[in-house]
Image (tube, rainbow, N blue to C red; front, top):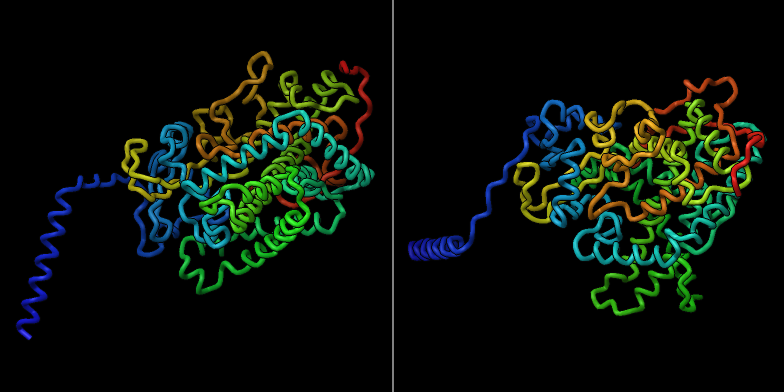
Length: 499
């Protein structure tokens, strides 16, 4: 027994000596220097301070106490929050690839298994993003052919709104047009608004987005072990599986009938998977993950933004009148808006930009340091989750004259010309800038201008514009609350624009 103890002791001494020699040959990692922040409680961290419904506003309140860069403990996870234009810009533009990764968010890890476009990292993300940019360009995004498709969809939405004959209609129906444009890119076909598949997909997307913003999914992401025990993730996973089953049907049918012609994003994915893909970056699982990302993000963001913009027009009739006066003067009644018309419609563009600034549709999506990073004077270790809070940029008091008010003047100079603002970052910036930014901007302009050219937006009978509800509904994005509007056809203006 004594010999055994001596032998184990000797082995431990040898191992310890070897470790010291190995460690002495390596440069020691610099000690992290964390930003200040509220003192955490055991296990829950700072969750006792959290407001579930509007986390971005809670984080902005904390920044008033701890400065533009601070640390919060979401459970046991240290997370660095960046607020204000200067801090967010330094992080997203100045750090390059060091802050391009996503942290492993548990719910998205379950859904996408590290694949797709938006929540993947490293080489897999770069391959998917580069491919998607090429594919969208090949499908005409940013070109005249896409503008024509947007106008075709505008005509279908106009017909749908006309069918109400001035009666109230659900605000969500304004999202049908941008959603169908996404479906057209994804599947190579548009759907009639009454098509069961169209209705089913929109319903599932709506349910998933609401569940993603729920307290139960947030709790699952912070305490995945507890969330798994309580089955907090099950409702959203069930809905996601239904969406994936529909995407699989489309994919199988297209693979069976495909003749090599690329007419959709799905076709491009099939073609890519049939090429030289030794690393399996475009196997079926990742193809479905990319399709799911494009479906969810492409429908939700542009759809919700258009709804917000039109709701704000009904709430601010004076602004709506000025937009329509400009449209009448420049375009007249008959010529539909084209992307290039943005150059001669400064007030219309200012209003649309202000709507996006005012609503902050997607307040933040976390990043993750891929190496030890010096950021705003602090040293963050590899793997640190970082939240660039876009709400704080779009409401930054140093960048906007009246940040809490809907004020199109933020984007106009003293002579009424449109002014670009550096702090206008609804699509984020840097390596992770929104992949569909150019398409979304074109869609929003043509649909917004086209609808206001044709219709006057009003509240339902008996409701004043001031009474319209602009308090965001809890979801993955900051959605407008469900309510009704009505539209009346506008009289043909006396002065026609040049055709």
